[in-house]
Image (cartoon, rainbow, N blue to C red):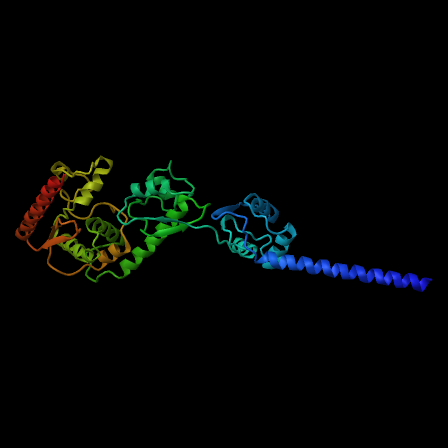
Length: 353
């Protein structure tokens, strides 16, 4: 009797073990299929934000709200443990597509591969242009609108520094939790590095006395031409003027001095009205840069092309190129050619109307 009960119990135990093995095998198969299965129920471009302090269950709730139906919570927890992601989910915004797998998503969250946005500083922008572009950048967090330039530079850790020209034209990547100050801090550091590289490579006989003067000259070169191969030649022309004590007589500095009063039309009265930035009335460089120069403009100012040119004027054919001259007589002839080209273009435009 006892043996019969023992046999029945042993048989029952074997059935339980077999059932447990079958359930475990079934669960493992489901888990294995879940790990690399696409999140097909989400829409393309869906984004989920991991906020500071979010636990894995909190992130799972956000995933469910975003349309993720795949996987039981235990499967997500097990996968997070296997990937070393549990307790290590990085703050930021993550993109989901119907092709994203749970493994790929949790790996991205563990490694902080957040959605990246781009912000480009354009060569030749001034600080007003840069501020306006930052204000339009989404979803960049806005913090500088109420700061004047002095407060802005103090917040960046450079109190007393003029902001003009201090941010390198380049494309910068940022996440949904980044601030405008974060982008500016990176751009400022990039300009410092670029400026030091250029200063270290300056010509041995450079007329420039400091990196700040190099930055200022580069900003003028940047505003004077968008033609890359002309930059060293224009930089050389301005360097010779500085050496000779000639006024630079460059329109972009006058325009910068006018600030928001400039209406797009530079008049004779503007050239004759003295301001710290009027290089028609004052010799030497203006007191600060007038724009954000590119690295190419920095190198042109550091290593200007040799030559004898002292004057230049636009060709006037829409190419952005210039005619150069060694003497005032040659320059006046080039000006006459420019005016002739300009008037012909105006007549042609009027005829088309």
